[in-house]
Image (cartoon, rainbow, N blue to C red; front, top):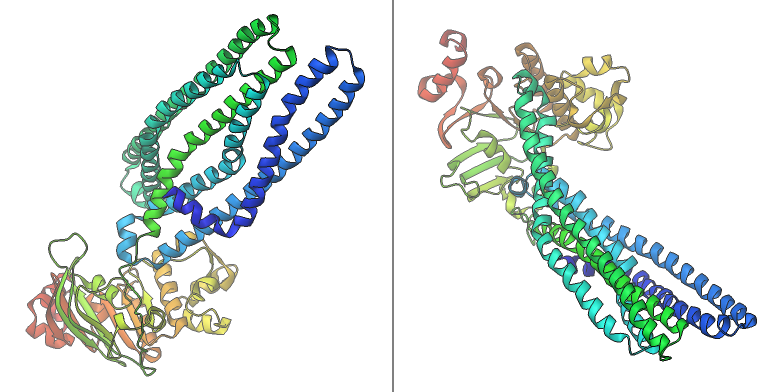
Length: 577
């Protein structure tokens, strides 16, 4: 997967890569030429006392060194540009793919691992591409060129190359084989730490309310200990590599000096040739060490690439139609026709045989006990999930046959857990319509009973909202989420238990203010409070994934025992009547 990702995402930068390879070739050739010139200075200049030769050759060496420096700097710059571009494009594609996921895929992966795959894992791939551009291209050139140049200097010592290089490669490869599973475990440990930390930050109020700080510290300590242990295991393996490399380096230097000195004494080799041969052997071993260093990074990057590839290869279960059918331009109703839905891996369907019709100009309410499937029903309308049986229709058109943007553009959803984005009150409201004027925003806030507290903020519409909207109360978040849906002026309003954090008087005022605005729209309200839906035109009672009653409030009090139980659990029958 690493090779595939690098090949695909470096394709737009193949021109830069080609120039980079050329520069690396020039720089490596210049580096290989220098020891030979140095050897000539010793043998032809120093040994013979020819100062002119020393100056001429030294000047030539200086010029070659400048060429090497310029080529290396340019190659490093181009490598950084290419790697950064690959990282940017890869992050963008992962982000776009996650954005196309349905709720099912997001739940399967989980938010913490999706975040770490788009940050930490992409960084690992980007780093290995940069290091590969800086090292891996020049390493084989230097190794092959070094062997050729060493043989030119003296064939009699070439057996040292034949011993040192395989010994170094074998020693390092044995360590690398043990590092691969540790790198895989390290990435999983990063996911675990992210998940625990995210849960603790998000649920800090719950943790403090139930005095569970010690328990959460223990959870984080467990995840952190696993990650630390894995990192230490990898660190110990890395710590073995460099002493082995240095041992082979130094042993090779001693061997060259020992056996080379005998050849110099016997007249088979000159001192300059011995010096050049030693430099070439060091360059050969250095190239092997560079490849080794890259090999230490490749296993972790391979694991990361596999995790990224898993996200990119996952298709959303909510698939846009090849030939979308246009939804009617008129106000459209919603129909659930014999709907069945089963969560992936579940043995029992959460919804079965659900049929209901929500017409424009009427408020349809869905009520039931916790876990009855109310929110799941609502999630099927905007195709956050796709039904596993039956059909969901908007204006008589199956939502699976309509373009996703067309479906979403007709719906204003207020989710059960209202989420606000980092920005301002105005920027959050304009998620509904980015062309809305300030007057439109204030009107939506007035209807949502949010005008008073927004005007009380120091900067009004420009007041800051932090991530998740945690700097406002739960009820204020709900009202801002309702205002956001109102700004969109959709044909269909979906309120998923969106009034639960409001007191009864605010709830009543808000519902009263909504009636004129939603007079011609289709309104579907999921609620647990009877007072919220008592005036609904049509109430659907759901129990254990089945519709057990339909009608108005008064009718259900006479015909539906489940509804009566819900009413009695919240207020007396006299108050309900």
